[in-house]
Image 1 (cartoon, one colour):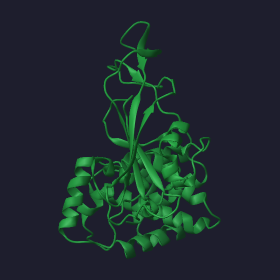
Image 2: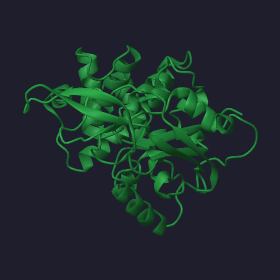
Image 3: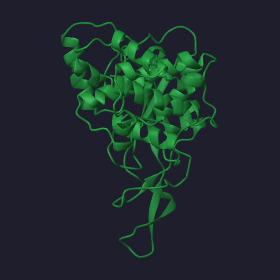
Image 4: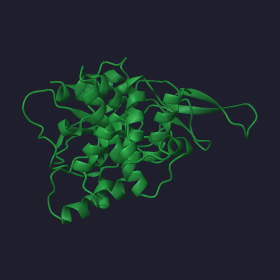
Length: 316
């Protein structure tokens, strides 16, 4: 756990300085490496950064954020994943007696909150970007041992199994006045890589008009989960998207079809359906990349369309 605490502390410090994956600097490479190793949703980096910088209590925020990431890193190590070289170098020779003050505080918190020999099957439930089937099996296993102090996921992104019928009895009820903190998931219908649920990146873009109720990273406040599915087969194309394929000479043009979507809002606690709406995607921006065997792409919903569809159930 000392190694996990150290990596997590270096990550949250980098995020506090503005790190994002893919931008080249050492901080950005660290963020990218940790996300790849834990297999968590990259959107959690943005959510963590918001949580760290969300108040003046920076030190407390850093510790709280690092605890969550340390547990995810420790879970990946328990699962047998090998640290990439840049992370292994960072913790070479690190032990409980050699921790810096921040890492020592996180290590102490983890050691207190997560006793030695904690049930690894329960950790699987916390994997926000893990396979839905594994999460469902883990849920059943955990419930068979009786109730525990909390069955909430590691982060808001860990509520994705709710889109496949999973309930989170320890989540707060959807009741009372707004706001109702909600996390929104969709599948990678344009990338067509996995079909797994992931958070909608546009919602976490600070340039878009979403309130804190849409972007909370705290799983303890999430009341509802919205799931977006694409409907039916493509019809008449509305545009064309040019791509280059190294295996073919010249550009490859793919038709863009109107994406027709159903968005369903569920209470996280009970799985109760709160509302359902239809969205006809109006954003005609070509995806930057698509699989080499892709035959078409879809338009996507705009930020305003999300707000129009379920905004009154989130913000009031």
